[in-house]
Image (cartoon, rainbow over all chains, first blue to last red):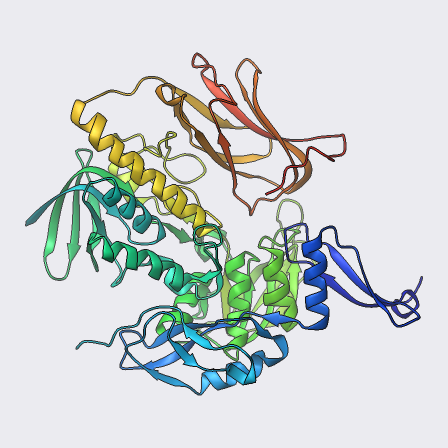
Length: 130
Length: 435
């Protein structure tokens, strides 16, 4: 049996574009060129390239709210961020408190973890009326 | 007792209720939404992850954003609603009894009713896990509400039973909140949610997915101390000698959803064997003028499809009030739709012969995954009405078929249609039709 190194496979990426779930192998040829094998459509190839060179994720979580109708506001990034920055972003969010009222789309944290993306509110959150 | 009158009463202010209410208002009638929670939006509000709205809004939204857009639209249209109001009875002459804190018991007389109560989660009782009854056992949606809306963590270390999308999304959500998810356990030999979620919710965080196993013992008396999981055979019976123990303080169950049938049954509507009420092609139940849409009818995997179905229910309710309600028209005969080979259920359950000149929308799920198949509809004389080849089918994907009457003719004298999913031998090349 060939080992991974012999066949030049440096990473296997499972495609998430559609439910077929193709296994896409990333191979390094002896001349150092990187090849993608196993994809069955262009979207799959694009996904594999993105996932290999610069994996990104959409972060959706909640931020604590002061004086709000609810104790939390759901938030998301307005653009996918580097997968490697998810933990930094979560730490910043865990230490943030926002004051109500909040409107959907309000920018709550700019350039989260140094990324070119902002944390925005996913809903309106009025002030708690006693 | 306070009494109200409305054109169309809508039970439930979630995705289905909101979309049908907007459609009714557009059709020139007055809807009234009755919602038991303290705000409109339904379960979407706790589904804070992205992936909603790709067909409805052409962009990827979170659940709360999707809900907010419909809520804003409903508020702009000045649609009437009552919050914190629990419907307790529906009568066949379309009186609704409900309770709330401000008015006590109220009565609403409607000309038509739309059932949009959504679904509920199957619980530990539904799957019979033996053992004590310690705290720390929740359904995944219940935990989702605690974490995403109320701001509580139900525990620190978790095992999740069920690899549906909610289960996998909760695994990531809890990991992001600093919890430790030991494993996601799935009784079927395959993952039941989307590959996207398997990759981005489990594999990204090294959470093991254990297929072909289920929870067979609950440990702990006051608080959960751990669970035993065991491999199962084809009949889902435990295989001796395959036990594995996982220490955890919380078990989440993501083991399926069932339509919320209590009011529907109590009102006297017939329920189909697969869950929701029996409906015709107008989404009308067996009770005249009572329609059903969204997860109370069938559990959907995309909210966009709930909205589309609810709009149809709204339009049909308007048509009913303007035509049959006023003229006291009777329905003509019906054709019965039957789930055939590898089909779990099919909606509608019946087609009105008087509607055969209109587009008929079928929705169904398969029983088991398959590749290279043909979806076909035949009548009782074996006459083929429809066929379409597909590359794959999976139980977790609801499939929709639209039958245009100009292209697919249904004989008005036939009595039943059978929808089947059968394997095809020859390779699918040019005939492949993919969405």
